[in-house]
Structures are given as C-alpha cells and as structure tokens.
Length: 155
Image 1: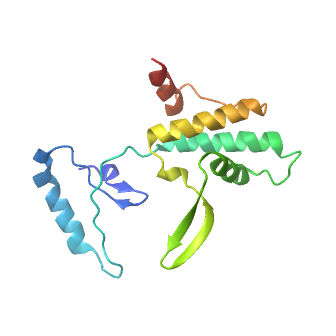
Image 2 (image 1 turned 30 degrees about the vertical axis):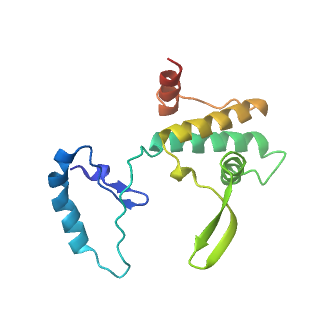
C-alpha cells in the first residue's frame, strides 16, 4: 500500500473499501500497533472515510489570502496574509471552544484542515464572492482543483 494513502495530518489511517481488503490491511495494522512506543496511548478509531481537502485547494486559498492582503495592506497595515486567513476562516467557518482535559479555550477559529473536499469548495466559494464584493479579483488557475471541481459541479 502506498504511504500517501495512509498518512494524514491527524495521524495514520488505513482506507478499506470492501471486506475483501480486510485481510490485506491487517498485517500493516498489526505491525503499527506492535511498533507503537506507548509513551502516549494509542487510539484506534473506526470512522467513515472522507476525502480531506486537497493540497491544491489549500495552496490556492493561501494564494488568495496573499492577494487579498496585497489589496488591503496599504489601508490596513495589519492585513497580512496570515491575518486575512484568520479573518476569512472566522467569518465563514466560525469559532469553537477547544477542550483540553478540563481546560476550555473559548472562541478559537475553526481549521480549514477539518474540511473535506466539498466543504472546502463551499468555503472557497464564499471567500471568492467576498473578494468580488470587496473589489478583489481572485485568481483561479486553469489547472487548479478548485476550477475543476466547480466545472464538475456545474455540469
């Protein structure tokens, strides 16, 4: 199994498409469980597979944040690409309280890394239209996954 199929930002995962694949995947799972150092407990969580937002989508979103920053930075020196990224995520994804043990950290901006491909397209649509409303024409490269998904969505 290719390594890129298993590694994600939240740890490792094994995608199983059918019962026929269970026996093929078990040796990898057993090996990983046996090699775990157990300095921190291991959690095995079974969940339905979701296509996480893509690297292409993430790169384009960062490019857009830079474009927006360039438009606003003269009037608002704090409008760095990173600040615009936080602003847009807060505006369109919202905030949440993060619980760490008994501690609660209120009002944290939600992460776009938690979005799947479709949710990321929706978020990017909101950013794109916000840009238009604020006289920022955001680049959508021909080869971008965002453009390809929009075309597929419209057909």
